[in-house]
Image (cartoon, chains in turn yellow, red):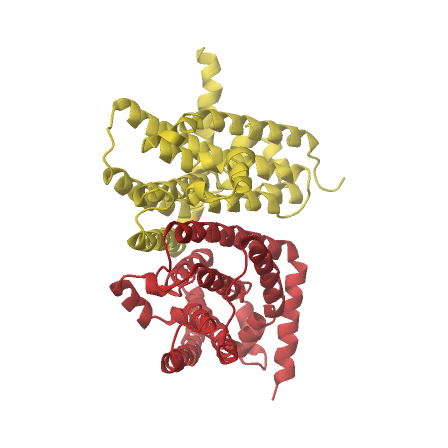
Length: 270
Length: 266
């Protein structure tokens, strides 16, 4: 058992070593770091002001209250923050494959996925996590929720699962780079942008849009269903329980697609 | 005078978009999702509340959102990042050696892609109109004429703001963060997200002293004929003062920045 654990621990260790090197590179430019942090915070405050202004005029949107919408909004930003802070590397996969730099990844004795994920750090993610976290804390304390140990645990599980879904979507769509050779791929960004729909309760959309963000690209499990579960909105909270399963499914699919793509990789110059 | 020089720069800038059409298309897709989400959100809000909200009916609100989208789609290609790259890579030195005015050159570059941006935005806009139904058109041709004037001023103002903010490139290389931050503040205070009348008084007071309202709110309200004659004249005046004031301010900033560069360069 110990022998089986060791490779996993080594992977985690290597992952953070890779990430740490990237952090050093970024921290060398102090002003850039501060600017990125603040810009992420400003984006969220502007978004919060927008939602707040709407709710100054109306009591609810389709039955969804202010704090519930803030919670969805916060979840989108926290998970986005986790994605950019720890797993920004997926956005560079296209370039690695196109330029042939991916060769370097293959000759190292570490899982290519770990290397890709740890390849970059997006410090704007820290700003997103902090402000998103604050917004979420405010939302959760402004509503009477019967906090039991189980519910607290569920909140943690839901946030982690939501982040996992987004990282899996990034990784899976980035892996398209193995099929389409271009310095930059549209597909991951296209899917990423779909997250725009998940900032608001999905009940406001037509069935077609709902189908896309529930089934095809499960963004609804990043914000909407977890919020419904935590706030105990009975009609929608049951799918919230499925969030961890959806996360595992997404990650499994992403890794599978990546590994199939990996076998197709041939370096430049062939 | 040297109009042909700058026309050539504008044309080259437009051609760049055709080279990077995939990136441009992607930018558009991002805004499409955003606009569609906003339409659904506002539709739900308006259908859920009887009559007008903040003095807007649903058809008026649709028109407002669409005009806001059109205005936001212009001059999206040449943002602070371009100047950031030029400073970082030292291309600014080449620009200084050229017999052209730097600000005018930048303006030509920013304006060049507008026909294409307008075309794509109209294309997207018509799809949205197709899905969400008709929008309010200006009842008075005078409003339409004033609207066009206001759009021209808004474009000039947007350039002036971006130009001023670009000067931060001399102090930081983190232009991505700068662009993102500027766009967020601009979207809130220009009225692109929500008409400014919806704001509580204190937030509206802040918006009123900032230049951003001239980017979306003033042209959109002119389009809808929401302001009476004197107010329209006043708002267009404020727009013009900000536009030309910031253009001038940008020139001063540039002069100061260039001096700093010369000193650092030895």
